[in-house]
Image (cartoon, rainbow, N blue to C red; front, side, top):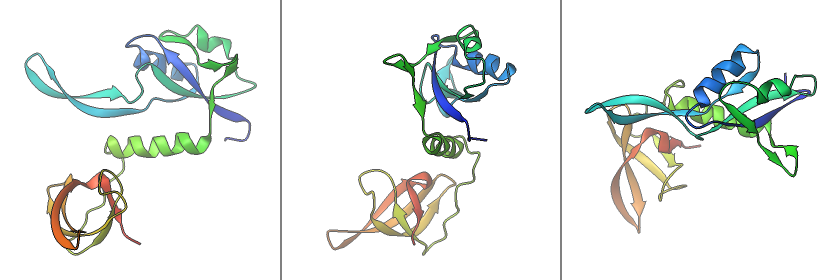
Length: 167
């Protein structure tokens, strides 16, 4: 699938990235629009909505044979991002990693369920790369860990997405 195609960056008009994605998809372009869930206060109530991870931008998979001029005239699209006149392309590995990250943020890939006593490594935040032991699961999104800080055991509560199974 990736033999002759590359991911390119498209800049969208203000608050029209979802519209641009819809219209590009309708034209049979492969698009990736990174999003994440966010709680916003709307009409006095807190509601869960979807927000773009990179406002005004989305990624389009294109090959030399595709009709690039159709992208510029698509509703919601402002322009192709270019550097020194050359369209900005991205490595497939970077886009795949972004897709995995967005899948975790949106709950599309299941978070691992850690059991008490499991050894984990912190992957995010100020305790990054430290090993810890799970002491409790605080709901579906949080875990309590026992860290060894300054030769003293410390209990820390972190998001499940900020830890990974050790070894």
